[in-house]
Image (cartoon, rainbow, N blue to C red; front, side, top):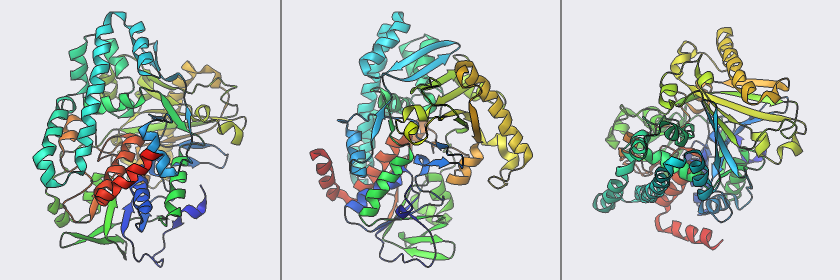
Length: 530
């Protein structure tokens, strides 16, 4: 990333005259900051990490390998899609996308392979070919996905309503959506079919929202599945291009980005935002937009008295699941190794809930793995890194597994911790060699990240990557909206809407609309005209 797009935070820099401060530079923060900057507001982003981007950033090593940390594929990115239009607005059309082709996901369940094809009709016909006796159930499932997502659109749009309008009208949208969001994925699918293998196949992509069928809200399931029905796309040049191209536009409109800027407090007086605190440094502004998650915002950046102003409790709100990931660098190209563009989901058996619930550090990769091939998805990789390839292999994890090392420092956690990571690598490689034996002997770089790595860079205390768990309870939390009860304090990020790049971007769009109000419609008209 070009260095001029951001600068290290220093207390003696000039921070005067800011309209809005965005805490955290993930997709939600990038979106609202860019919208506000394009509307003529003076905006600054403060990021605690040494690079901006949140889960859109990539990390590099001296041997030249680079891996994404959060974005593995994105749906609804055809040139005529609304979502593509929003991203084109954020990046002035400079961010390019590569389709993953006809097949975007493959699931292997107990040795049987199921492919997911792009396009609703292709998706449906492929499922019917696997389960011809379940054709009626498959039709019902897709109709239910469509109906649920239509009501979801109204549910999320309601989040920008003013309190009086939300009470008088908004409850209708919430009630209509609750028919779907308040049931688990398992409950809904069990009403459609009794075929356990079909249910497992329909839930094979549940890692995209981080919960197994009996724990996840069907509302979350429907949004994620619907998001990918037309296929998967990957940002050309890697996931960090999302952040870089957005920051180019943001800074061109006067926005500033400060890294190594660990905000320690949001300063409130008389129920109104005054600014932020970074250790002893106070930075004033008219409003603060938090993109660091609801738990971090209210439990770490606000005083107890200020939290009480919002009149809600986070005690019963569960964090999403954590993950553990193996990053690999290979000394042959993706083409030479015949690596696919599609993602690969592996389940040892069809009991997905059992696999997630009974996971341990020892058995996690043996029972479940999500495998992505970023170098195969990106047409620029071979140009910039000829004769090499990258793989990422992920399994479910729990912060409790690493409790012994929680108070240690990153990169200095000791030999026993390194041994645990090495054991995970060994077990995950067994899975990789089973399904992709051609890579054996080509691995020249490897690295493992754990929930402690996630906590270190995001401050998510449970090492979660998806914020609040996507349970039915999540969709009853009325405070998950951009505007808070504290004047000048706004929220953005996946907690406000839904998991993933698109969900976080949507949260930023809603937040910008809540701030700009009717002025935001001029921007919508501009996007539509293009």
